[in-house]
Length: 413
Image (cartoon, rainbow, N blue to C red; front, side, top):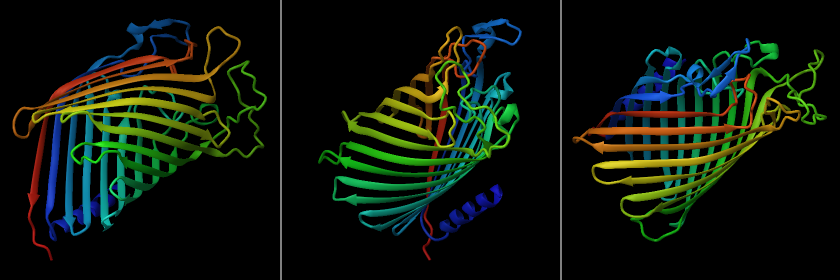
């Protein structure tokens, strides 16, 4: 199935090269790097034998080699654009095979201008990922979490005069995960598939009359419905729960017809892109997310995330700085505690910072670097669990990048 999808994409794009002008674009990045606390471990943990482990025992640090390859083919004819893009990212850690990353992303996008103020686009996407992170339970993983994703998306963009634009977006996403550990009843492993519907409305407002500068306000609201197959929710919330223990669920009833897990999201986002000067641009962002656990489980939360992007560039260099603070408060999930009688709901506070820098060496060659820092504070104080705890992660890499562009002039039929 995967090969068939890629073959169809290739056939469409190659067919386009025989009828119109085609632009080819590719890039390749190679960079060594280093990551501290790869598995996002806490700084203290007590194992099943009662032995206390500290940072020197828990934190895994390692060097890695990073490879990033991109290829894009774009054809434009009349009022229609056809784009086929591919992205492959590989990261190989020295001595830590379980931390290696594989990410392949392929997309075919068709965009058509209905008239001067109306644009319709559709996109098909295939993605295959194997990486560290968190599983669907929200637990940090010591082994890769893999999935295959298929996605169909459509956008309708409508411009109202010179200052306003409205974009309606819709997505259907299907994900097929690898086996999830401890997602089932009494610790049994289950296979996971996910179907997701995503609808959003975005309003763009241009605030100035100078076309040479950007002063744009973006407002968006989204709704998402996520359904899991073969992942039954056996942990139904007990309406009588008062926070006096760490198990807020009803006892398992073998006669009850338990349903698959299902979540819904409401997402609101506000950002403001503003040119400070010819070389500097800023973009503050504020995003609010509310997740509802429709299956009566403990996965619902509220999340607020303010952030700031700063961009700077000149003829031979470019830089980007990003900073955000995220506060997530679960509505029902319990934060395990070490020595208290009342168990609060789980809360996370994240600080994320990233700096990217790129400098031109020759016509198509660039030196680049990336530095990122993530700090999470959690109100889980139980040291006999490794997941949902506080942690810090540092990531740095420096390397070279090669860009290539070419336009093929072909005869139209």
